[in-house]
Length: 274
Image 1 (cartoon, rainbow, N blue to C red):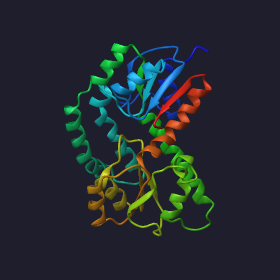
Image 2 (tube, rainbow, N blue to C red):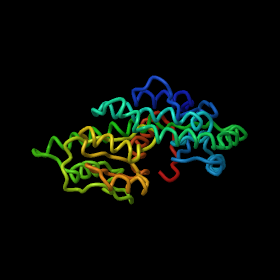
Image 3 (spheres, rainbow, N blue to C red):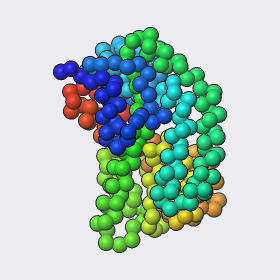
Image 4 (spheres, one colour):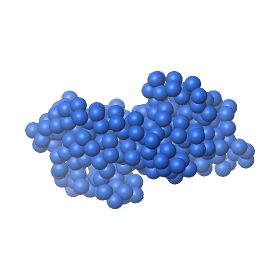
């Protein structure tokens, strides 16, 4: 079997996510071809590159940005939050205002990043290396949305926050996870009439984005993770519920479906922590 090139790995992800071009938080750091044994991890640093080389992998795929333009341009993908909010009925001006604090913090973090360390090591090793973030998250977001909606149509009654959780647990990534689904804001017995799965936008939107959803009629927001200080901000006056599903299992939803397609093309997947 001839394996896959980094360009083919990118093209497959874009096709599955219905995207035309690679978003700013994803990058091919070292291009390559005929990849037959692919090392895959959520996060890849210099240690993971060394392990991949030592165990005979001929390509490395990270989910999260590992350097280069994917780190420096990461704030650009946060604007996807505005698109998601508008799709759920949030006024465009209010959506942009809600995103601004997160966007400003992301720009400052990018300025501080040691952005070429990991890609430089991959270049020294000569090992093909890329990361795919937003495309795989978009695949996962669609799976979660479809799963929730399909489950809710079987209920024959108004759904609750607990019903949303039960729907997500039908996916093996959540049903078999060591990380429990939590409701740090709101309660499981509250109605879940309008649900927004906030994923595939770089990172979670924090308190300000959740508040914008609540102010425009969405009563249940699904995040992968939420910082404790953001939880406290929301608890002081939130009108809705926030479901937190867990970062690792949430990322696995899209990643697993993508990797299954890569395997169907004859590439052996070596997983590290996923």
